[in-house]
Length: 390
Image (cartoon, rainbow, N blue to C red):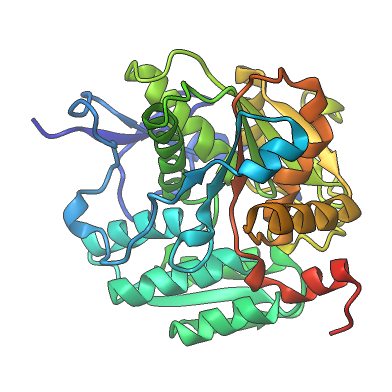
């Protein structure tokens, strides 16, 4: 029996068919406030349960591109465990994805959906990782990819985009401007938008990491995760992690929701602020604050998936920790020199977050730190942390 998949609005409950051109809930999107996170973000649901032990996804496996996305290592950093007296510390290493980024999980599913529906072009805005990711997966899938990228994006990520054969539009402005330009292009041409949160498939693709974490801990005889530390900008990875755990709870493969930590840079901490000190209940985010952090992959003024992610944090008792750029660079060096894993600054915000709160956690607790991008994507920031002029 084939599974029935559909979009559902978590705010009003309205359901929609999963078809090209459907992105947000019609009714709830009408409540969109200027310069605020997206209203009407949709989630993907199924009507009949999948076969036991499978990974439920709304696109058949036959449409997935021939590129090895996911199934990344979850491993025990023995020196870090000894250094910090943390026998339950684990690293989820998504630098091993083809483009060196966690974003490949979302791009993989979006590309499969495009192939299934005969869509030839995908467009998106990005601070760099989603762009290089979609370009890489698009190259494997034979799709045209157009990316709008702030001119300040790291050179390594721009080169990746061009090497993979995507069209790069350099934007004299921040991510928010690039986002608006990409939406305008999508509406004008009909190209499939891969924009984070706006396209529900981006959240759905990222849930796969939760399945892997639970399965790998079980195989290691380590039980289930107690704490998961997630680097957060727009909030889509955070929401994807929660969706995966929600799926596993529904399927009976997980008995309790882990404590998920949103780890943000001080200079880009809108979701943490909304959780810890909301502007108001009607408008928890308030006016945007210009982002100022070297962690470019989590640097956003307006977190597009902020409302949706905030809802998950509140519903499941999620926590937030904010770290400085100095904390991030120190964590990057500690992680690399004591484990051999070189993560980019955005990823190391998660490790910096764990370092900041580790003394408040039970010694026996299992803590998974998500390292979502390779340090080779942003050499300039690493050089700054080492005191090297580039």
